[in-house]
Length: 238
Length: 238
Image (cartoon, rainbow over all chains, first blue to last red; front, top):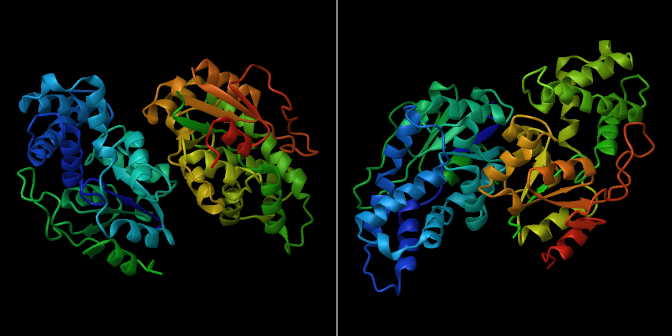
C-alpha cells in the first residue's frame, strides 16, 4: 500500500525552461546587452547532466546542485561573451532562477488533491535549500524534502531513491516515484519503488537539450496525462 | 542578517508530556489494564537522553529516534508490567504518539507570523519521518526539515546545527536556533548560530523527568515568553 509520493521536480512539477529564460530575460533587461534568453537557458541546462556525471562516476565528491548550477552559469556566461558584465553578486542572484520556476498548470491543484491521502516530497537532484525556496516561492505543498542531499548523490543513482524512502520511514514498495522521465522511473523501480509516468510534452520546447518522453517505456503502475489525473487514479481526488 | 529560524520541537513547539500521556490513556482505555498514563509518559521520556547518549558517545552508530523511542517503549511496557498485553502492531501504533503532540497555544500562530519573513525548519532530534508526520497531524508550517537525520547525530552535537544550517544553504550566523532549553542554545551558539530563548514553564508538569529553564543562562540574541513575542521581536508580526 502506497503511503508517500516522491516527485521529480525539474520538468515534472515545474517548467524549468520558460522559468529560467524569463529570469535571464529580466536579469539582462536594460543592461544594454542583447541576450537570447531561451538559448541561454538551454545552454545552461545542457551542462546539467555532464556536471552531475562527474559526481555519479566518483571522479568528484558530492556537492549540492546549487554549486554545479553556479559553475555551469559561469561557463554559460563565458560562452555568451557575458563574463565581464556580471559580478559575483549578480551571478548568485541569477543562480536563484532555479528557485522561481513556474509549476505546470495542473501541478499545485494536483499536489493539493494528492496530499489529502499521501505524504508528498520532492525527490529531485536539487538540494534541500533549493527545493525549500522553490516551494515557498511558487507554493508547492511538500511534507518533507528528500532527494539528492539525502542520498548524497544524483539520480538515477539507486541510493537517492532508497535513502529517500528510508528518510520517510517507509519501505521502498510503500513509495511511488512520479516523473515525466522514463529513466527516472526505471531507476526508482530498480530500487523497489512504484512508478507513475506523467507526460510533459512541452518540457524542452523547441530547444536542443532533450526530447520529451511522450510514452511510457515500461508497465509503470500509473500512466497519466497530469497530476489531477494522478489524483483520480490514486483515489485522492476530492 | 538572519534568514532562517531553526526550532527545537519537543518542549519548545509541542507539549510532549500531555500529548504522550493522552495517547497512552487512549491506547489502554478499555483494555482492562489500569495504567498511569502520566507516569508512563515520564518513564518513556526519561530514557530519551540516555538512549541518545549511546550514539553521541560513539558506542552505537546513528539510528533514527523512532528506533530509540521504540526500544524505550518496549522497556517502559516491561517496567509497567504490560509487556504481555501489547503486540508488535500495537507497539508500532503507540510509538506514533510522538507524531501527534499538541503545539503550545502560541506555536502555530507564531510560526505562521514568523514564516512571513523567515525560512522555518525544525532542528529536532526527531527524524525527518517523525517531523513530517507531526507537522501534518498538528499543522506546523515548515519549509524544510533538518536536524538529527541531516547531521547523523543528536543535539547538542555540533554537527547537527552546522549541517542543518548548511542544508538550508546558509552560513551559521544567518540562522537562529529557537529553544526552551539553554543547553540547546549554548551548543547552537558554539556552532555559530544565533539563539532565541522561549520560556516553556509547563514542559515537565509535576513529573520527575526534568525542570524547565525559567531563565536564560546567557545573553541570547532574543529572550521571549512565546512565539508571538518572538515574531514581534524579529519584525515578523503582521
